[in-house]
Figure 1 (cartoon, one colour):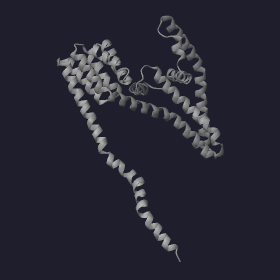
Figure 2: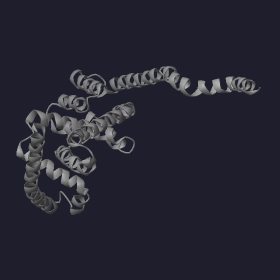
Figure 3: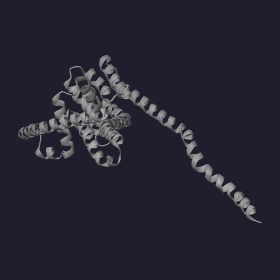
Figure 4: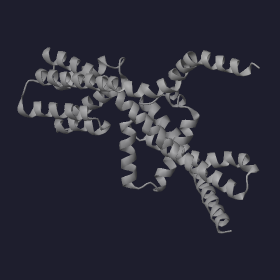
Length: 306
């Protein structure tokens, strides 16, 4: 009985949250339309760009903005979420709102969708199924965002050595650090968009921030990659001590390529151990069948004779 009351209370809380969101979303939508019109008049945003956003994303963003405006998400949690979103390759406050809105919508929508499917279960099974669907809706966006973060980091690390080679060419041609970073960002836009976006952010911070070393350190803090931290530290030391930029970049590029080669060699060394189980499971039974099959058939033939 207590469990049923707790479940009813949980659904009451969810219904209250949905009611609050339903009341806040129209206001957020009106404010968004007003901002879009003001941006269009100022030449900052066009109507086609606003309409190009998919409808589910706009709904999730509106719900997320309503949740953020309510103050439910605290400062430390919001800061950690922003760092995770930035590490996944997204910029600005809108991806955070979309992420929070997706969590809220999935947490409410999945249990509602599971209610018809749980009709054949008992009360306990129905409660467990609905609760599991709510937990899955709450956890699923975190899993997707974590996967996107890992994919973004892998893509950035994959093209870093080539970007350093381009920076060496730019430095030897006489370009300063800011111009070299922007040039690399432009040239790498087609080959590696994630890395080009990171270098574009570095170039922007180098122009805006008063301390250029802080801008270089932020490059590694955004993605959490050790290679970018080393690149930022190398460039910061170059600016501080006046060492040749091209020589430092060439040394770092050689080290990164050597580390990449070592990782490939380590993966290749693991292949014999990884192939042991498939060999035992698929190849050895076939060999035993081919070698021992005729003998078994011969024995069965002899055993069947009178």
